Image (cartoon, rainbow, N blue to C red):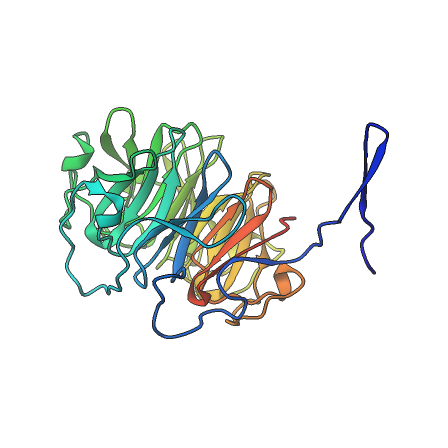
Length: 366
């Protein structure tokens, strides 16, 4: 059945506005997914995460098939590449020389995540260069926010630029804009950068890779691949464990597993207790408008949603365990291929970063 147009009264004039059809939109990329084996410097290649600036413009980062920061114009159109030279890398390559300077001259190495501060600064997890960088959109320049550019561990309490990281994967801005959560995955720690003081502290993890200990002091527990984190307005930090196939919650300095207590890779548990559900290599977490946690269940090719109040989990996007390119009429009939990011945009839509399909999708969030 067709949707009726929206009627709006303006003065004495009736305006008939076309109804916005529900459905899934390909924001950038080809509807049919990746078009070729060789990446194209004019297209978005292997997008991994998105964030929105104060004007509502989508920014994103490419992983190793592009290594660039891009932005989509407010009115639509081709992506604008803000920083990073186009090049293809792999994990066997050593870090590049990390310097400050014009964004177009930077050689990123496996960008995983980004966050946009209240001042407009774009923070970048430059993973295999072992640093967090900051892009200034006013000057078009990039500086090092944290890390030395060499893999290592340590530096808590001192200057962030002197602290050592080993593959920082996530850089999530806290709700008050004062801190940046960084998943220091090879050090098995979740760390925090105080943006005002310019210092680093450890929030969770004792430096040992392993199954988390429920009820333990967060900094005294092992962590199995801390991959992505976000902080809720009530102070709870949600942390996705890639190798642990789980979601943990950190509150008042203590840790507990809220999704997949067994830590076994698989798919299942929708509608039931989230602690009994299964995940497979979750790669990202974000909050929706109702305070629920979006979990990017990458190796299951879908997006799950954990409801902290009900203690349950549901699938909200993708066809579980089935990678594909089909764009359906709704999220549950749309196929994804190893998504790595998700967010709620300023219009309240769910945005999914469909990484192996080289595209970003948007559609209604229920």
